[in-house]
Image (cartoon, rainbow, N blue to C red; front, side, top):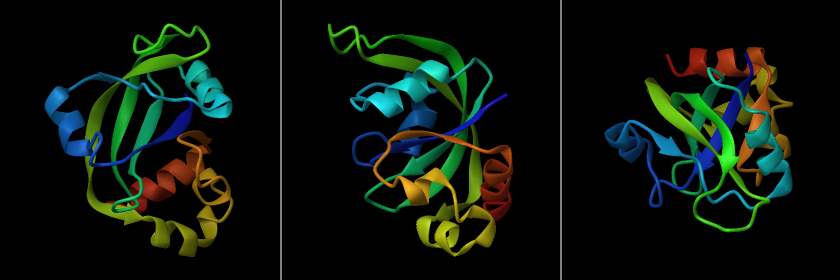
Length: 134
């Protein structure tokens, strides 16, 4: 199993809306590194859901329920989506400040590549964030 983090601005697509929908395809990715990460996602992989810009916090856990396929919002074959479904809301959001202050998370992609919208994580990093949110 692999571990990931995806970002969404809450005014565009919030964790609450995602939970109401129960399933979504993760579209709008227009960065090649983020696209490659979508391509590498496998069914069953776990994904942290991060509210970017407003809040700047990890709010929940999702899972990949369908592997990458052509982004239906564009005819450009370069862009992909995956289907995600919500798994669990964290008891308390884990802020970017908490993540930056945690010695065990100092090398996390969220800190090193702050603008990347889809990124891989080490299991230890994923587990630590879930622990902080418990």
